[in-house]
Image (cartoon, rainbow, N blue to C red; front, top):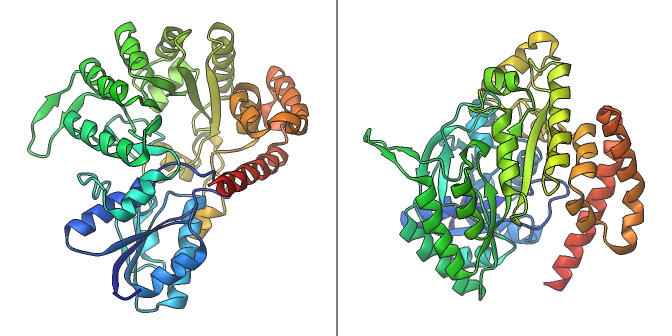
Length: 443
């Protein structure tokens, strides 16, 4: 490189078996912000780019920043920053993303970190579109935001923030540019934490009410014109027949509901979800036969959850599978991310919950097995066979079929915690790596 580089922004691997996937907005949006300030910026995406590229850019960079979420990705981020210390001692190192927000002081204390960016947003108001940005838009599945933030107060969530919608004209302009760049845009993934929330509280104190049905119709018209199909997240209590129709007509093919629990008491009084079990049932019913795949995401093992409340969740899942056979289900182990009331409960060890001692380093968080446990894998084998069949095609199905049969038995016996999750995790990781290699060779 002939010129000094102001900023190298790196996106670490999200997990040990990370598939090639979504656009790395968490480095592209800050990159656009820095360019607006007249700085030179380059990107490194560990999912795609060789380590030699990182070394070359890091040697020339004045600032090296990593964006990461708490967990495996924070450990990979730590490794990248340690590498910077080895090859360019003059570089100023930065950490941003959710981990910087959730564990600000711990990250600031790490010797490999010079500066922490704890703000919820930086750069989202910019549209990243220089030559390096366009390279990222061409890779994998396009990740896009039509809004940012979610102001609900779910006790397990540490990421609540004001909801801010993107102007519909900007959505049309930006997606049209991406579609032209890629020679067409068939699918996108909306990364909105709460698509369609509707209530916007501006910094000047103004409160704007957006009609979510009208907004979905406007955005849907853009998607239809561009031939886009999309997946995203919506609260189940938003779903009415009219809103469902707008979502279906917009080209949605997959939608996730944060169902969390099958216990009415736990949903309303402990999680503070803002709705009960009936909203989950109604929303799933309304999407039957529409062609939209519904994923219901549940959590097991939160502090204050009783065994009877967990059985309520299992019973609701069985009800969904019987009444709404097109639905899918994931069950994640509760992970105590800093910032929410449930995290405080976990650290205190309320009601017999095993006291959680949070790691103090990015590498420490990366050493934990978060969200996935035996119950997660058992439920996945039972209720997400679309993914399983995608990973184990043709003759490879024989490798996983016995585990699918075992999962169904253990779920019926209400013993999902006895499933050999670690064995299946290794098997799936090998299949994902095999698929990544085939994708890379094809590219």
